[in-house]
Amino acid sequence: AEKERQELAEQVAKLEPSRIQVQEEVNTFQQKLEQTTQQLAKKKEQAKQHDSKVKELEQEIATSTKDLEELEAEYEEAKRDAAPDQVTLTQQQEEEYERVKEAAAAASVEPRRQLAILQKKLETARARAAEYTSQLDDLMKRKAEVNREVNDYTERSQKISQSMEKTEADRKEAERLLREATEEVQRANQRREELDTKIEELNNKLRDVGEDRRKNRDEERLLLAIESLKRHFPGVLGRLVDLCRPTQRKYNLAVTVAAGKDMDAIVVDTKATGLECIRYLREQRVGTATFLPLDTLQVPSRESTERIRARVADDP
Image (cartoon, rainbow, N blue to C red; front, side):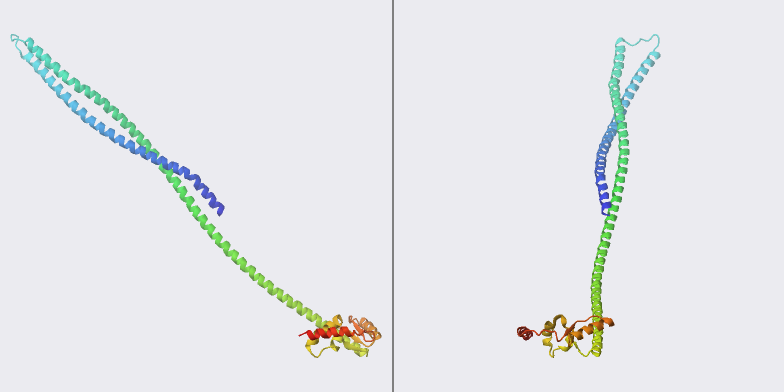
């Protein structure tokens, strides 16, 4: 989940420069569109003013032309209506007529020139207006295309963001499940340790019980063997631990230290009795035992006895 989240973050980072570039292009096209729209409106206004001026000049030209035509018509009619014997126009009248005619023609030249200039300006303005309109259409198409790209990038960014959010949620859920599993494992390990401890305690108890049972069996077998030896050999006196059992518990340590490993040994009167007992045990396959014949035992020295008594006396 963490790797997928990092990959999505890298994709978003890669898309970010493109998104910024597209946004800058949108802003640039928007500015150009506003400028072109303003210029187009200005040119349309100028064209409108030119149209009005052209109409005024056309009206003036038409008026002057009409007046000239009326004057010429009157002149021609006057010549047709004149009788053969009537006097024709004088030289002065002819000159006046030509002067008026030239003045009327001259009066219509400037309006016609201005009309031509204005028509040319109007055509130029209309051409530029058409060019601006074409540019405006191109910009509108480019704007629509850029808007589609922005929408695509926005949609992809939203999808990636949603995917990242879902990945983050999955990661958190996985971490929660991992924590729960870890806690469960820890609890299971603790329970296992507790059970291992209990099992170890039970095994120890079972080993102790088995050891006690084995010792009891050995003890019982040894006691039976001693009883059998006593029946067969009168010189068998019994175990040292039974013969030297102190009357007070505080002397147990002294007796145990003094007897040592011979505490379970069997005391007999003579060495010969001990050998016969060993032979008997071997024949009966009862087991083995240690025998202490009284005729061969060495009595401890007085000093050793005093040391033992001193130790007993110091024993609480």
